[in-house]
Length: 156
Length: 156
DNA sequence: ACATTTTTGACTAATATTGACCTTTATTAT
DNA sequence: ATAATAAAGGTCAATATTAGTCAAAAATGT
Image (cartoon, rainbow over all chains, first blue to last red; front, top):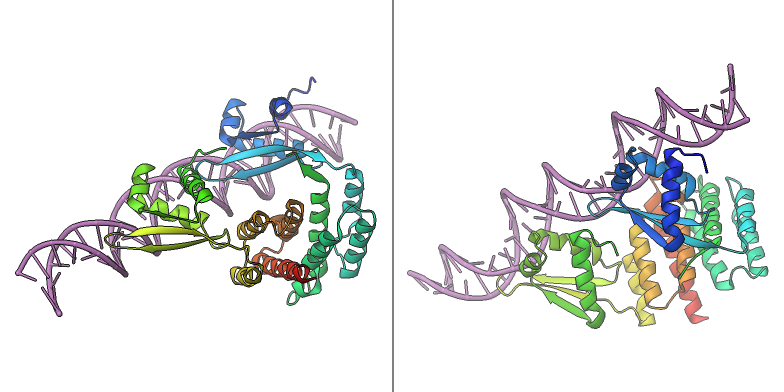
């Protein structure tokens, strides 16, 4: 641990607190003052070190009483599968391909029938009625977002 | 949690009372005095936190003996539910309103937490990254599609 | 040398707070 | 009854308070 740049210091500080707590809530400007850096460096640290793949969820609010909240989550046992799947999905995704992926997830008992049906509903043709240009593009985004969500669970 | 701002305090105060009551009636000036803020902040809280999407109806009267009344909407009657939902969902649907609706459906035990989280993932901001023009429009379509799907399940 | 990561800051966006002015309803005076 | 006044609540825009984005510059690694 001799990488003592400021970003690493901030990362270590936050992770140390997260060792004993499920989540932490900070004020960006306070952190920045404490570590004598510009506020946007806090965003940099969060974006590079507290990603969902690393098991962290980040929420924030602006305005008076604003905050940044970092929450530890449990990565699913099938996490690797999801990461792989997410990478496999192209920028464009047809309805039939989406259907096939969800069918597979259902057969593998990763999702219930009802969950699958809901996800399909969110990507169905009717959703994209008058914007068919972007249909497969947005569907791809939706599918990857579903898969990302399946890759972790919040700790109760 | 992080009640650093007055609006959250007022919101929590009102919701706490609404936990035990179907409705609550307040006087704007009294609230403002109690929380040491200007009267219009009460309107701000009501307009941002007690919307129809969040499951609340608001009535008020001016003049002597005036009041603001907040009423919890009861969605537990399945017949009325889907009709009510259709009405809530405009041609355009913001992420926050979508969140509020799903939260309500979860509270009413119509969907599981996991189903809600998946549906939210399908409508999250990241899905619409580079097509923000149509964001709220498509989100509205997705939500309607989810609701339609849920209404089938009911009668299966 | 070149590539990657970190640091910085100017600009942007979201949310909360405040206050001046407006509208509605009830009460009181004539 | 009608008019004037008082007693509510409503609206809207300015300002304040946060956090987010993005790209250039600096530092570091290979």
